[in-house]
Amino acid sequence: MAAFAVHGALPPLAALAYAAAGCGLTGLFVALVRTGVHRRMGGAWFTTLQLLSACTLMLATAAAVPQIGMLLMLTMIVAVATAALQLPLRHVLAVSGLIAVVSLALLWAYGGRFGMPLDDGWLRLLSGTWFALILGKIAAINLIGTQMRKALAASNARLAQALTQVRELSERDELTGLQNRRSILTLLTEERARFARGGPAFAVAIMDIDHFKRVNDRHGHATGDEVLRRFAKIASGILRSTDRIARFGGEEFLLLLPNTPDARLAGLAAERFRCAVEAHPWADVSADLAVTCSIGLTISRAGEEAAEMLERADAALYRAKSAGRNTVCAG
Image 1 (tube, one colour):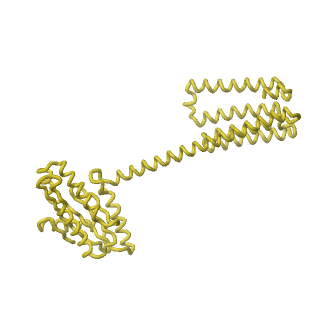
Image 2 (spheres, rainbow, N blue to C red; image 1 turned 90 degrees about the vertical axis):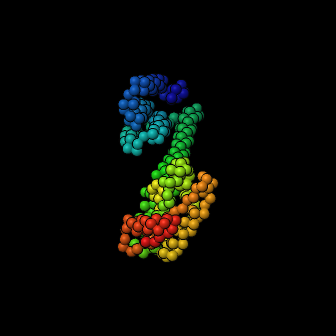
Image 3 (cartoon, one colour; image 1 turned 45 degrees about the vertical axis):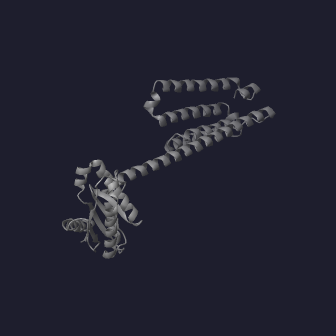
């Protein structure tokens, strides 16, 4: 504005008044920040107040010197776009609506006098420079918006990763790395619902490490923990990709065998696992250590709930233990 005033396109007083008002508003908002008023108002309301103040100054100046009114309106658009990066949509719509009403009134009142100075080459250069600065600010807004979107995308990716980790922790047994009781029961309920809708039958087995308390008492709890970890590793290496195993509690494990309608096939899978546990070189863990397991197995039946199926598998496990352990019983 000072350049327009020097060239005679504007009254010098208008440029001075605009500069003084701008400095006054800047000082006011600096004082509000230093006194903590902005925190009591909240960021959105404080930014809205700043935007309204700046736009009011530009609209008042446009009314006083309408010959640069169009340049001031373009500048207001940049101000609103910049503030919109931080404001809620309702604040942006309210301020934009107010500006639109006042701008329409000014255009109606001043008509052809409302524009930008283009009377000679210098004025055209000044107006073009102002317009170029506005375009530069718009490019800067776009850059800020791009950076904000990238930061938001990165933040969302970190959040998704954190949620995945939390979900994994909530579904995994810390010692063995297998699924935990809650997780496997959810899968069992889903499998039972699929079976009830006409899906294939499935099998469930409860496996218990024989004399595990004796392992802890004779070889120590660290050895007991290693036995549990190796037991889990043996299971993970033998089972099909569709099978699921979880630590069900203590030394008990729950095995879910989807798409297993044949009790004989389920029994063979359980027997293969029992033999793998028995044949494992447990002496590598601790001298004179031998580990076996007992398995209670059952196949899904129409009309029964998951809890009933688990009761039958548990009863079969009890029979396996009563039969001398290290065996598989079906129920």
